[in-house]
Every structure is written in structure tokens, then in C-alpha cells.
Amino acid sequence: MLQRASAAVSENVDHISTAVSSHLLVCGSKAALIDASVAGCQEQLCAGIESSLGSLDLLEYILLTHVHFDHLGAVPYLRNKKPDLKLFTSDSAAEILKDRDLLAQLYQQNQEVSQAMNADFNFSPAQWMSYFEVSEVVGEGDSLDLGLGVNVRVLDLPGHTSDLVGYFITPDQILDAGEAVGGIFGRAQLSPAFCAGYRDYLKSLDRICDLQCHAINFSHSGVLRGNLVPEYLSEAKESAEKFYSQVRSRLRASETPKAIAQDLLGDWQAGRISPEGPFCNTQMIVIKDMVDTVSRELATTVDRRGSKHSKKDDRSKS
Image (spheres, rainbow, N blue to C red):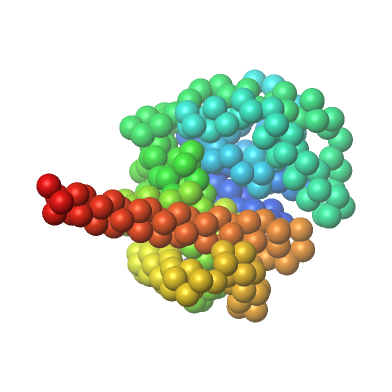
């Protein structure tokens, strides 16, 4: 089943739901939050943490899956309230967060969403950006010991973005990997999200299948549990392959990437796969990035074929 409401997922993991995001709170003798929503939900997220833990003081870590505005917006609010709160990211994400221009962009996106949600957003750009100093870089093979036998294993899972890492919680067998698993909005309402690389995205899905997860968190829709997990992962891969095939056919028919992306957004909205309101533009960017990814791979394939033909021609002349 898809658990949308805030509630326990397992003995060591709680699910915290906000208006636009879904989070895992992992608890041993220390606690870790995976991702941090948007600034417009910062108070709601903090209240959920306090409801689960009794106090924000018991939260030790924020574990970031990747650098997108809707996964880190509440980091400044939480670190302002608890200054010793540690922020863990991948090495690539840590490098991205050093880019002041990008941070300014993330600030603006969170400010705009806060305004759309009629939520308070009282940080200046400089204040907000100052809270993204990374405490520790993590990557493939690393493990965070939260005490009482609870561990969080780090997995490199590129495809949605190049900087994405997933967090696999043991002994509970629960995964949070951002949009490395795509999105789910209901029965047969799946959305692929290979913004940075189609082949990498499929490999990451294959790897996630091998984990034999008991539950998977979806960043914007809840926690999928039980026998539906392997079924979803199989369908997610099929959904990505279908999207790729459709876009490739349309590109070969000389349709422009922009026109394809616009049509697909309309299809997703009609199927209620795409959110309305302030996140509609975000979904358009995701679709456009995927179309561009297919376009790049198609161009690379053509270049390789052209190179092979050129080498054959050269050999025939010698």
C-alpha cells in the first residue's frame, strides 16, 4: 500500500508527510532526516519531527539525496533552530552547493513557492545560503551508524541527477533515494525522472531491485510498502523505457524537443501525473530534461555510427 499520512513505517523509521513532500525520519540512539522539503513547508516539517522525536534537539543529521530546490528548502530553518545539526551530502552535491549563483537560484525558487503557499519566508539571500555548509561528504560504501543496531548505507544512484545518493536503512530494509525511483501518484500513474542519464537511471533501478526493499519512500507522494515494491520497480523501468522509446521516435520524425516536452506535459496533467500550481513549471523542467537526455543519446548514437562508417571508408581507400 502507499502510505501518505505521517505515521510509523517500521520499528526504526517514521514517515513525515508535508503538503508537498514525503520524508523518512530514521531513529536509533541518534536520529536522521532524509531530505528537507521546500521552505514553504519548513514549519510543518519541523512540527512533524518534533511530534516523532519529542524535540528537535534529538535530530542529529540531515541526509541530502541531491541538490534540487524541493529537497533542501527547509535546511536553513532547521539549522537555524538547531545550529549543530549536521548536513551530509554526496561529494558532487557538496561541490554544487559551493556555487553561489546556484544557491541564489535555489533561494529564489523556495521564495516563490513560499509566496504561492502563503507561507512565511523570512531569510535574506545571504542568511539562507549561509546554512549550506556541508558537514560530511558521503558516497558509495559509506555507512552511518545511528546506534541501537540501526544503520544507513549510502548508495550512488545516478540518473535522475549526477549527484544523487540513496540511503538504505537496515535492519528495516527501507530505501529513500529521491527520484532515483521516479514518481508514483496512484495506480498506473508513474513518472520516470531520468534528467541526467537514461542508461544510468535504468542501472540504478536494477540495483534498487536487488536490494529487496520492504518499503520505498517517494519524495512527493508517500511510502510504498510490501509486495507492491517489486511490482512498482518493474513497472517503473517499463515506464522509463516507454518514455524513451516514444521521445526517440518523435525526435526521429523531426519534432522539436520543446514541442515534444509541451505535449507530454499536457498528457501528464490530463493523467494527473503532473502537479498543478507552483510545481507545474518544475515538472515541465523534468520532462524537458528527459527529452534533452534522449536527444543527446540519439545524437551520440548517430555520431558513433558516422565514425564507424568513416573508419570503414578509410580502410577501403588504403
